[in-house]
Image (cartoon, rainbow, N blue to C red; front, side, top):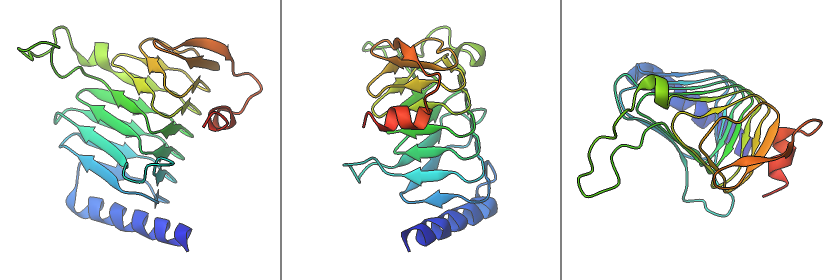
Length: 197
């Protein structure tokens, strides 16, 4: 029954977006176990057969996909599983297929300086700030991906990590800033992170 309701919610959300939100494209098979909030006038693309879920132990959290500029783009591939993920884009965030993001944040801008003036951050451009996440990537709970980062295919980001630079394909990384811990060869990315909580 729960799965049927999730499919029905996903279908309704997709129809509503098709009718009233021309900047949003959602593929078929969306399953919504928890609330999905898409805010902003930028382009949002969600591939087919995606899952929207909650964070374990905290049912108040939900998935947010926010664009902070009309030219902003959030593109998420097929079969993505988003559990209380927070994706905020002023420029561009591209996420591949078969990705798991659990209670983590991806943010491609600093929004303002860290002082009382709160000025626009210097040197931010689409080219410098774009975030690219490859296929079959797993991002563990309470992690944070900062502007300008690329995470290549089959990488695993352990829970609680802060990703500030390139993560190579097949790597398992953790810490602040995130650094390689071990190779992901022979491990399933989903299993590697799920076993950590």
